[in-house]
Amino acid sequence: MTQGIVHRRLMCFAVIAAVAAGMSCGERGDERVKADESKAHVRRFWEAHDRARDLYVVEDFAAARAAYLNALELDPRHTASLYNLANSEFRLGHHASALDCLKRLEEVDPYETKPKLLAGVILADPRPDGPFDLAGAQAMLDRAVEMNREESGPFLLQGRTAVLAGDSLH
Image (cartoon, rainbow, N blue to C red; front, side):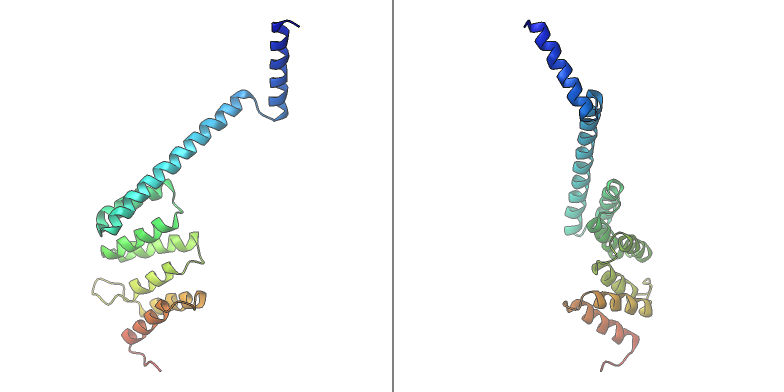
C-alpha cells in the first residue's frame, strides 16, 4: 500500500468518526472557543469578586460596593456577592438599596437565613435615616428562626427587636 492510500484511508476514518460523533471539525473548534471564553469569564468574575472582598474586609464599603456591582455584572446570581453588596449598602446608610439586594438574594436562594437576619437588622435600625419597621423586622427574624433553630443569633435579634418595640419579654 502506498503512503497516499494510507493517508486517504486515515482521513476517511477521521471524517466518519467526526460524523459519528455528530460534529464537524469546525464545530469542535467552536466548542473549544466557547469553553475558553467561559473560562475567561469565570476568571474575570473571581478576580472582580476577590477585589471586592478585599475592599470589604478592610471596610472600604464604597469601593467594595462598586467592585461587587462589577462582579455581579459577570454573575448576577452569586450569593456571597449579593449578600456583601447588601451589607456594604447598609454600612453606607443606603437602606433601600440594601433591602433590594436582599430581595434579589431571596429570589436566588430562598433557603438562606443570613439575608433574612440582615433584613431584620436593617428594618429594626432605629437611626433617623433608617426604615425602622419593627413589624417587618420581626417577620424576617421569625422566618430566620423557623428555618434555623440551631443558632442563637436569630433569637437574640428577635429579643432586641422586641425590646425596641416595647414588648415585654416573658
